[in-house]
Image 1: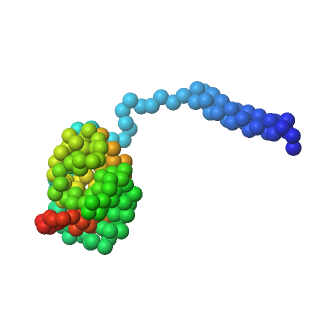
Image 2: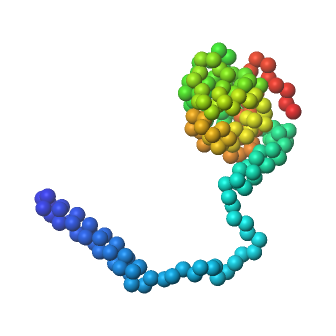
Image 3: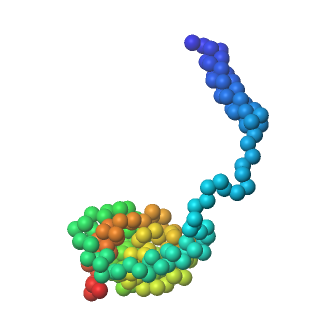
Length: 181
């Protein structure tokens, strides 16, 4: 088959696609349907969601989490397994080097953005809170949503057991593990 035959086949496919798109556009013009201004079927009790309402609900959900119950779901062995997701960017060893992310040795109880030889984002430095069990739980749900502007590009841990296990594992990896609440 020579190039002329291939060009004819490609032209036929493109022409067919253009005809189908053209017929669709022509039919939309020919059979134009006006949408009703008010909905024909109203659902009672719905409220429109705004960004401020969603932010308030997120804050309430974050505040309601019972950290004792959450940590009771966790398990160190499971936390070590789930932490392998984190080990692509973080190390958790005494005297370990920083990788893409900072070394997480003794992270629970440490101030956010405080490792001297790591270049944090401006958002993380400005955050500056202590990493408590509650803070770490909220952060691990979705880091970029919790601290806007952080350079941590991790999707987060949605499952409560995974978060609890990772928090327990990170707490155990430190010079002075914090007592569980």
